[in-house]
Length: 313
Image (tube, rainbow, N blue to C red; front, side, top):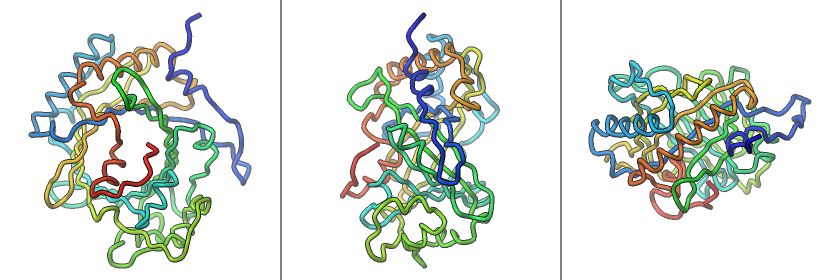
């Protein structure tokens, strides 16, 4: 019997406990693989095709299916992303991330602005045990992800982050509306805790206001470049994204990502996980000159203007 792959080992790690109301803790239902890329590589729209070719080569070498999608021939989609935190980064320094995002079409915002709240750690026990459910009357969606990235010190390996997320539209949570106009009427941490009660696990000193991180509005250009299939598990859409600051269009980070979705960690066969891991490591070799190993997209935003927070990602 062969040893488990790292992905298989990580997905099988569980701590079967319950939250305070008796509900069983969330199980991982997404496996997301990410490569953070150097922003200077993004010089034109042709870059998306150039990187897609590298993905095709890595897929071919590792026996992974590579299938163009209708969106791979379309223009990149545009989203606006805002990160919200206190002036001293109380959220990020305690492993929490709050962001608001909205999609644009033809230069105009469309659909409901979305709040994404997450706890991110490399500790499975802590990530699973934290109840991220919001206290709102509307609908929300919890996503518990195993995020896989290259090692910080060299290519050819894997490191993990657990990302325990909840997403909801602003229309589903009237009490969160002020997160959409932080610069006009800032929300305090105490008010944020009213509908994100898990934040009461971190110390709150005085009237700390929630503001736009580094006064930066992120413009995200994102394009689907293919669909990947890993033996018995298919349907992993891979996309390439560029984050730049709105206004001066300063590019500061890129990302290639794909994810597998499943009901529980046992739903993905060992062969599929082995193929996913082999492809991810091969792509690091093929795209070595593109990689930025020591950060995440969120980390890049927090470090834009000096005074970086604690590095835990």
